[in-house]
Length: 489
Image (cartoon, rainbow, N blue to C red; front, side, top):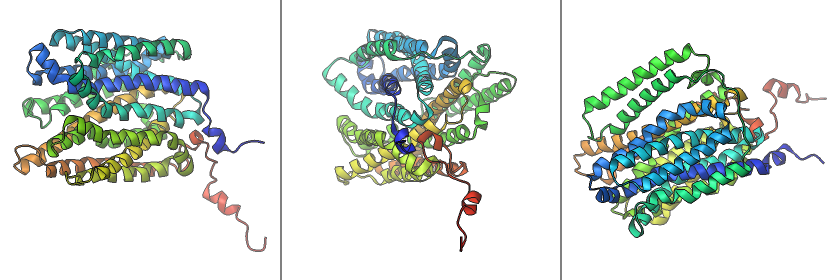
């Protein structure tokens, strides 16, 4: 007896499930590493004999390296094969981790972090591409749910784990813990991952790589320094303007290229274009959480770093609950309705964080973060799946490069918006250090940004993504009227 579409679509092949687990584990290692180091920086500064403020270059060097090389990932994967590139990325990232752990000075550490960034730049988009080429369309929702987890778990698990390692072990173990994960990942990719490759659509766009790299570096540097007093306001503004000018030059360059590094013609695809636009808004608001929430708990509430980490972990618990539920929710309500109403609820739950006070019961804070984590994870799964629903196979690598670069930029903008909102609120209130009311203003600002993403889904067709979840095809209204029995029939 044939099974209904809802049951057939809930099945995921063992190969897709195995690929998803391997890719997700590698991406979790990358995301965890990018956040865990922040907790260890003061201890590393004492070990090297540097001012802790100067150690921030260890973070920015990795971020810039990641940003520059992400656009090249799609072409490289097509040229050398997704499995080969993904495995090489894990190798490069693991070697970079070892070199970070044995560094005896800031210069050595920065060089090793740049190498790590190159590996991470290939690992994230190529890992997603590998899964997209393995999974059938009906499996994409379940597969993408696995890839949502690293982005949500890494920033939450990283700080408390980093504090634990630094307190009870040596800071070098914040890097050495990547070694066994990397080795297992290399072996798993070799044994279980299939290789896919597409003929590159053209020669490597070196000029495009230079233009996109310079543009992203300038914009991200400017956004990272807005309102922080690290450099002069003129330099911050100049870098942002320069980045936008170079971005326009790349746009002119891309129009003349048959296969540009970042292919903006993908924005003409309805699912990809609308998902990408809404994702940028949503991720900008959500990107401020890893910065604002721990700071509010530690500076505003006076909690210790370990206490803060244990509280923020509630968000990841919500994401874990979401993973098996995502495909059922999307099948029941469809992508458009889910993105609209779940986006509204996500924005509301983020804005509720503005009401947090030290007098709140811990259980109430946990509940808000738990629900918020569930809703955000569902939203990211929907965006990350629907975006690739109408992308032709030959353009899949270009789509992953553009989408991942957009995610990286949106997350950076989110941190900058949160920091700037907090700084402006503190300045206008004449507070020497941020107080609870200042954090409230910042959470309202980023919450409104998240809410702004929901209306974008109104422009999606009601049936968008139905083929990804196995929902029965819905007949147009005219057909539905015509098929309705008339009185007397």
